[in-house]
Amino acid sequence: MRDYQSRVESALDARLPIPDTEPVKLHEAMRYVSLNGGKRIRAMLVYAAGQLIGTDLSVLDAPACAVELIHAYSLVHDDLPAMDDDALRRGKPSCHIAYDEATAILVGDGLQSLAFELLAKDPTCNLPPSIKLTMIAKLAHAAGPPGMVGGQAKDIAAEGRALNVDQLKDIHLHKTGALIRAAVALGAMANEAIQPHTLDLLDDYATCIGLAFQIVDDILDVESNSQTLGKHTGADRQLAKATFPSVIGLQASKNMARSLYKEAECALDKLPLSAHMLRDLAKMMVERRY
Ligand code: GRG
Image (cartoon, rainbow, N blue to C red; front, side, top):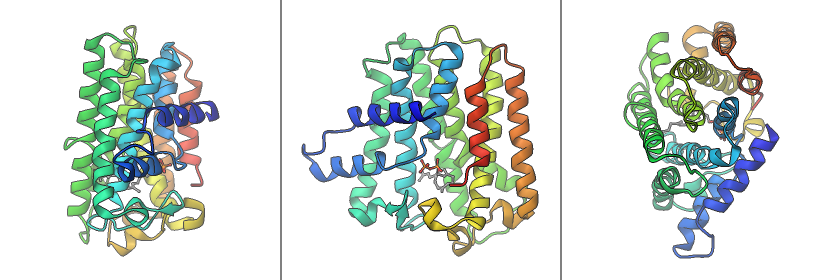
């Protein structure tokens, strides 16, 4: 996993705009938010799903960067005053604090377009155009209104309202889960040999761990502290947002995360391949402390 992490760090570094070229502030800020110590879970999922099918890691660099860039953009925009208004991200001042709001909006926009440009024309992603087109469509769907952006819109609309657990699941399957599903799908799709049945099982796995990941995020928001997490805790309470612990309780949230993890493992058990990296990643995602 550390190899995957350092691989995506170098791949991002090589693909982000050069810092001292115009517009310098935008380029610097894009690098500030993308090379600042995220866990790189989504990139690891791309690499692990791809390696499961036997895909060369070099082909997976562009998709791994693309999902991390979309993720970084979502965090930058999520931290803006118009959204969660958070001044701390990955242990450092959020983009709009370190720079300014206009720059943070442009950084998000720039990271998003770079993500799609990499999938379309990064020279290392030398796949047939039809596969690349399917990957671009998959990521666009996951990041857009049917996925992450739609989930964020529902999340904002739900502020201050009482939700039941199904409504909460629906928000997070989109807001957090859609990009995690896309990461696994992109890794698996980057190979002509992928079988539809394998893709379906991997999607079951990703759906379960995506939701479990968000439940753990909500639990950590209650049980951890901002120094460990690198972001302010208790923000959801301040914004009167429903969370898994607030809707079903802390212990039931832990049980739900555990049972989704088991479900994810069951999906992997049905694969005709040994998916030990995806197994380890699922474990890491539910047992994480930050
Ligand atoms: C603004 C379009 C738009 C979407 C924002 C994903 C999202 C939607 C907002 C992020 C807010 C948040 C804290 C969600 C909880 C789960 C989550 C995505 C946590 C952050 O992901 P990690 O823990 O972050 O993988 P690192 O920093 O490790 O990359």
